[in-house]
Length: 305
Image 1 (cartoon, rainbow, N blue to C red):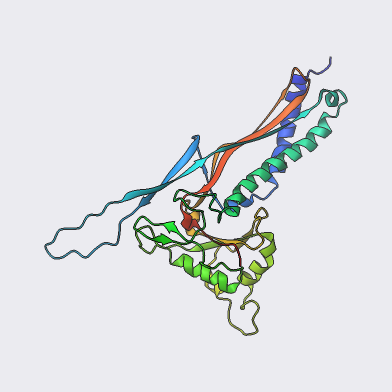
Image 2 (tube, rainbow, N blue to C red):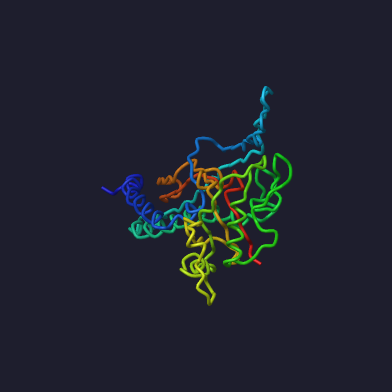
């Protein structure tokens, strides 16, 4: 008795699912080095920045205590994208017993495609970080010199004059991050945690961070960046960044889940079924997620000189 297409799909699906999972998981998830990851149960997520109190004043003897108001600032919205792709094994391929070899090749290609899209979407948050066409909840780009503050004025998470990655520009960025304030002007404890670079800056980043002495000098000065341990996470290379000169510093704000974020609405799902009208066997992969940022203090960047 010949096996039906429905039976064939049922028999073939577990093996293809396993192959898909192994192929999908073998790629390093570079986006997870940049974004904090949370689950979502809604069509979109919204996070509101809460503005705290100003500096506490001195209370005079016998005088009343001053009151302050905590307010809400901007809202960051994450709208999930549905990512899906499928392939079909033709009726003729099934008849010619090619479904096994073709299915394996197509499944691997499908896993690579789904993984690539996720990496590109994550990296595009950084690729568009300087663009006025991609704004956050505060109305300006992720990396900007004029983030509006609730208490008045603006703040920056980039240098006024951007520079290529070198020891001086990195030290300047680390100092800038250490002087971040909240929206009421209070100094906050923000530390740099990790340097993110494209492949073209790999060796420069390694020399700056890992040389025991200062890189590119003839003296015996220590490498202060390495010696102080100010970048505890070292550096990570993201192969999906499209500017060979740009570099980024993640901060403790992102590490604490308040900066750059990825929401996973639906984890990867695969499904296989026969199609009556064509006789094809179809295999589909699908997931839902979103990338973005809540607090711009989670990152500092430069486009290079």
